[in-house]
Amino acid sequence: MKIASNSGEHGQIKPRVVEIIGPAGAGKTTLFRSLSDYPEHIRLETFPNVRRALDAPFYIRYGIQLIPSILRLSRRNSRKLNRREFAWLSILKGWPFVLQREGRKRSQVIVLDQGPVYLMVEIRESGPEYLKSNDAEEFWQELYSQWAAALDMIVWLDAEDIYLLERIQNRTKGHVVKNESVPLVHEFLARYRRAFDYVVSSMETCAGGPRVLRFDTSRQRPQEIVVSLLSELGISCQTTWS
Image (cartoon, rainbow, N blue to C red; front, side, top):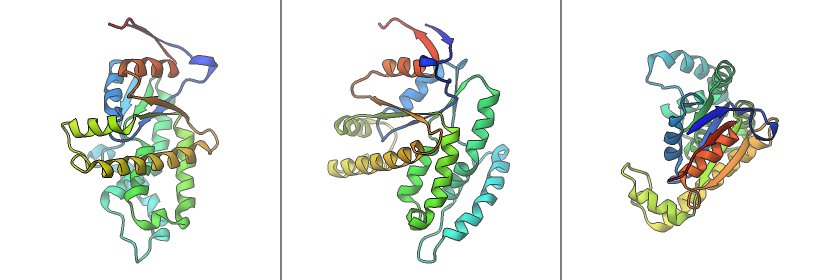
């Protein structure tokens, strides 16, 4: 397989920061791992590690910046943020600036597995109620705008529920709905699709919002998705299928 960089199809500027999203079982991990075969052109990343000493300054800096907004929005009748949620909001607050700096310094495309869309969906779905209120919309809009400027492309994987259900039940690692009833899994998938759609649509309406590529992993093989994505990333790929 020969791979060469170019400026992207249709003269578009080559994307620098890309996130892979989708419901459970859609094939995100499979695609993410497949892209590791192209380290010269693609750099795989996840968010700063809260347990790593080198990342402590990041959390201190952006956690402090986050506190005034949280104090302004929080309510007595709503539960407080837990540590994980506070870390996630700190990531959403500061990580876009880190990725933009890295994107300017490197020739590689940065691909995120669990990125901003994932974090925003998780917080909006399971976070404190005050973050879902109308009072919090200005807070979210600021995050959408920051990430619209930092994120160039969203790769949205999905499949019909029957395939997702089978994959969730057959996976070796656990999942919150792995052993639940079929109707409950359908409801879970529908709820997260709505949440993804809301967050992605909110980012698309911002100036310079990301392009969104959608792939049906029940109809397209992983290799086909990889080749299509490489082309969209400005990386030409020539291969012969076995």
